[in-house]
Image (cartoon, rainbow, N blue to C red; front, top):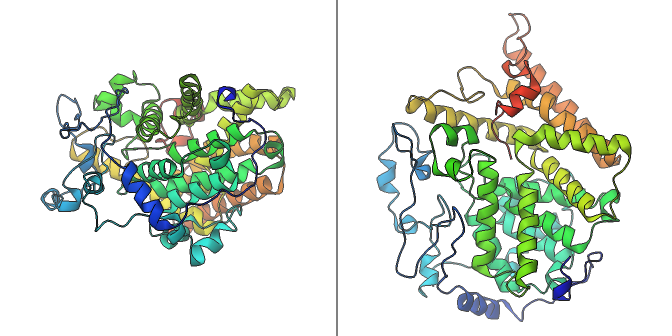
Length: 470
């Protein structure tokens, strides 16, 4: 609770936020605010100095040097790296492993050719109509991303914060908030097939659906809702497109920094905090409240570590068995938010088939790209990452069986609503669809054997058998 700030911790109001006096004034405010950035000494976050840019640290693997900015360059086309020197990709921002500072010219006061994504100009036509139905489970985030010209995460998150009245309630500066969301979206790697800004927007939309469930909407405070939405938007920030085992076996400095424990999740959290501090979004709060907010944000993001799935699921099941979840208790509400974020993070199998299949193809392609990199550098190929020995269907069936179904079964016990039944129904249909597709591809041989990952679900999860889909 941010009592020292004078901000109430009661239910989020529905009052509309007063908008700036015209988009021109808003642009002037943005230009004034986007001045030189101060350095932020924060763990692994690389920062820009006023003089120039320090080089990014590279992998410390003794046998090879992997530059994460070129991970997904197609094999045999290294010449593309030379083309990468175009003006819009000339300078790379150091708060990220890959974000290109096309906006750096704006920071130097020379950006007449860079259009600023102004809210009033983006809230038009079909995108506005879609936002009116943002609480629907069949919300098509791919279509919404196209309608917003690739700004789905910015537009969606701003809309939800505004709809809950959180901008006004927490006295958030609109310009700083917009700048923060722009930087967050830029720090997602567009070349990742799956872990990109569209995935973050999809998770944020799913989180909003869960926040509207009766069990939560009646109990969550405005602070809880703020944390839930911010955690969803930043939960995979600066994801390099490879999983934790890859970082560990290549002796990447992030793995060393976080002692091989929740490496990616720690990095997502610290990257998010770096942007909060850089933009000064909560600089008007007392230091103690800001630190508490950062810790709570980290606790939510760290909960998305798939290797800790069994720990959270066992604790959730125990609470439900004992019927001792008390949502008037702040710690219990926070735990439920953690579980909601975990559900939102892996809810793709619960979407309608048209959406679920797209996500399945994307996450599998990201796995396979990692496998291609491992083969290229003569590393052991991670489980599920070898495109020669795995199929999208088998991977998805295994994931649903051992990860998604147990989690959503317990969530439906906690929140037995139409939405929960809809999600379980979609997952059952999607699982059957993948199974029938696998049989139709090979009608002559006997039914395919169980996926290789079926041997021991708990062990597989703990050993990273399923690459991180958070």
